[in-house]
Image (tube, rainbow, N blue to C red; front, side, top):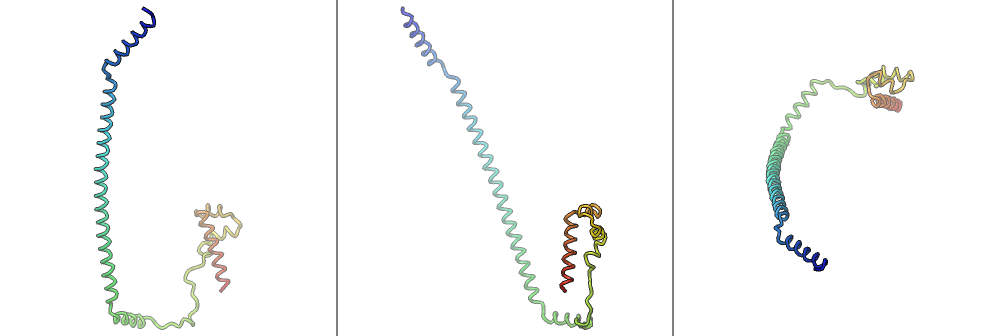
Length: 167
């Protein structure tokens, strides 16, 4: 026999053996695919159940909020009706009582009284350091304030002085 004929016969035999041999690898792949599909199906089902629970809780929250809103709107309407129904005579009597208790004051005759001290007097320590030429950082550390707070107080004092000068 020729060597090339021997090679062809051996090749045909190997191919025939490979073809007849059962393929276990294909069965394993099919099992793995079916396992993955079942896992994905289970995951999708769990997601759907969680979404349904979430949707029902959102719907119930929405209902509760709408009920609270309606309840508060009803209260507001009731209070508005009560304030409208206050007899005007009560208002007249209360102003008469107030007028009897308070003496008449002529606004033109009263001197201008300063109710609050100016900013410089309220923060005298801060302005003492500032007038000495100390930096804002130093003043802030010494007074226990923030830099921005010190700058704001100084700017407000300037504006207060300008306002008084304009009067």
